[in-house]
Length: 186
Image (cartoon, rainbow, N blue to C red):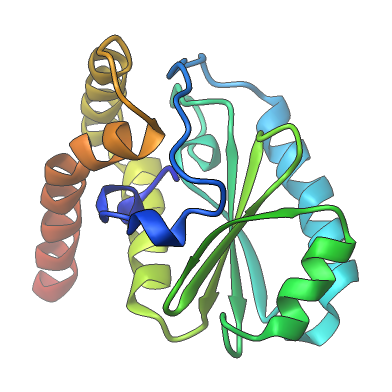
């Protein structure tokens, strides 16, 4: 996961298939990421119909110019993230369930290059994902600092991607706090 929820500790039982050891590779920004998101958005909207209240590109691949793990993160706002009918529709479309936790489901493609996060439309985490993305889109200094941190962390050994994501947590919290303070000052 590539945004604010990245730092959240995911319960071992929530991970379908358990922890996975994978190398963390940070790629320079790829102009193909928005097109990949658009294709997946159409696929998700076709599968979910009106249950997909919003389908948004989030995470680092949604920030022009930002280096990232080449995994497109998608936020799908739904009436109820735990709705098994929604899950069944995504499974039928070829997505694989990876995370099942209260209020959140994460599916991914077989190639593991797209993560689809289901959150209820009013979930605080959905707002955090949007706020972090938007802050990185508008703040060059935060974007540069985040990329530097990600590249440094990617060079360290991790037992799985969740540990890498958790290590970014303090930085993400600082950015979100700054964004809240900015919004309150307006």
